[in-house]
Image (cartoon, rainbow over all chains, first blue to last red; front, top):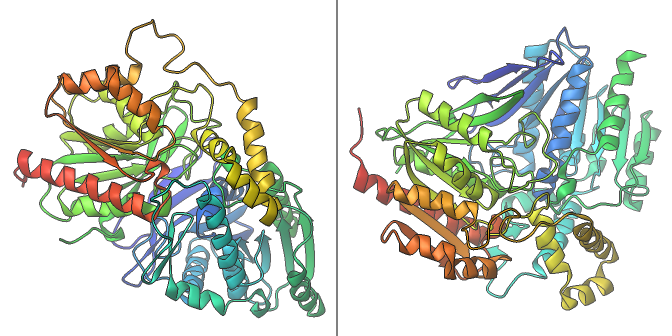
Length: 274
Length: 297
């Protein structure tokens, strides 16, 4: 991993997994990634596409926890920050650049861990990026997926207004030129424009899908997508965690959710453990 | 001035006890000052990027001035191992901070600057007595109350949830969010909240963080303190300025620069607050470097 700057590797004494953090990508702007590898040869691979805003902070430890549990059970995992986000380089990110980042991460994982069956795991916004990037025979794990990019932006704007309700007078206006402020994050008009075209329905045909929601069943708009996948021969499972919580607000629940992580890890590992 | 990019950064795993902490070292992109700046995040499980990656931006800007900069995830946060269930101001992540300081020294820094926001500001003060080569500090929005086992965020949300106007608007528009705020409020009363100012402090004695600040000031360490007038704990901060904290600052004229922002700075929850914090920190450290240092070859 890396190129011009070194990566950092550690081996976990208890589980034997190896974690390598570094920057990858061939373009001027590179992105930050962590590869979690099992103690012996990997049986499968997972590429995790994160969310974008405060929901990313909220789900960060669950992402890390899932990656570590998967690696301990023989699955190689790569997690990354899109260019323009997290530790990655500055970049005027769009849906297209994020799909590119996921594909680069996928190639990197296959280079370091060998040819493997791949599961794409997308968290909230990342679910749209994962579904858009899927190749035939891939599996998908989707955490609390929105059905459209516009839907995600709308929900974030609504959460921003809720969070701003108690703000004291003199708080900064929410927009500034080509940037819209959402929950203390800068979202460019360019990203919003590209998000407006993004729908889950454009996903390639996949083999199996796990659709995880925090509460109840998926929204009605999702049923069309799910039925289309099923009609194409995909097996789609829906799991509700029953937590009824919002990931927009950073709170003590930022700790990994055992049910969320456990359900995900079991589902992914079933592929090769049975 | 050129800012650093990922090509000037190297991830590094730090060891503290049984834990591995992920740090990112940003190397200078102009003549090195031989000074290491450690960026300390707030509580609330926010990774070392801070909200909207403001610490990534700050690190890459400071590298343009010749500083070595390091940001890292506390144990139980971000990429690091371990578990943190509460951000308790009375049992902080000081060993994590000192491990990062040691790494900066091992990578060539002969003097150290500590920069921290909220919980991270308290971490800077906690660690200061154990950093003999401390050169400067920037501490923003430090809590001046000690809540054993309680969460700043919880209190912040709880106070907001108490607003009648917020409740009225929420109830009519978004019932789901009413549940979220109600749950947070319930949680507030379930948690043990300690006495204000430190449970075991003798009457009249200054709180620990004031003693730590005084220690740094005795060593002639310049300090930039930032606070927002609209911060949730500004009234307590203002009160502290009238008592022990103010006396400590007054006893060392010229060493503490106190900047009060009109808006809400705590948590850097807005882009404006992030920009203000970055600009003030960069400006203070750039001026300090100009006054203190000639670049080392």
